[in-house]
Image (cartoon, rainbow, N blue to C red):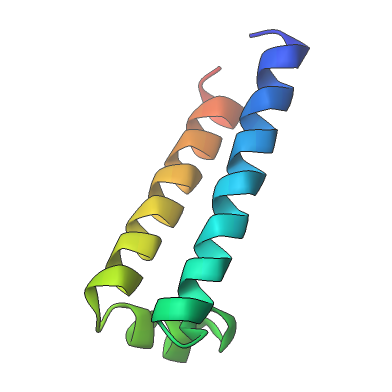
Length: 70
């Protein structure tokens, strides 16, 4: 991977996280900003929160793959 590719991946991740934060505030009542245990439990209790958590998990998987298995 070139530096440009990693830069574009980073920009994409930041953009997706920004969209997820907006969705969190609109549909999950800001549960993602309330702390780990309480926020995750609140987000997991509704479908949009579950989708946000799933996307965050996918981003974490991509980052782990990029760092350790590149």
